Length: 139
Image (cartoon, rainbow, N blue to C red):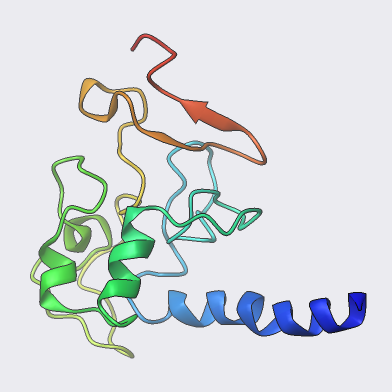
């Protein structure tokens, strides 16, 4: 039974890195909580320890896992910057295989700067297995 479950989960885990190539700078999205990269861009946990999607992950899935103009122009995390601005495609011209116009300057699914008034009350995982609830931090 364990073998069957593991075999069923392998394709799901293997698919995540593939999606990172479907939007600009997908392999170079900064982690607003640490000096490293947010590996699971569409998920609440930067290292993919949970399957819970952040709003960018939900919006990306709703767009058919395609970088569309509408997804680029959307501010999935509510921090005042479009997904395109955060991912280095402010003009929304990027296509799969293109070099992005700029470097990624934010995480489109996590409100930044972390702890700011604009991001107050948003929940996400900031580090390995550590839930942060900004509502309880009185920021």
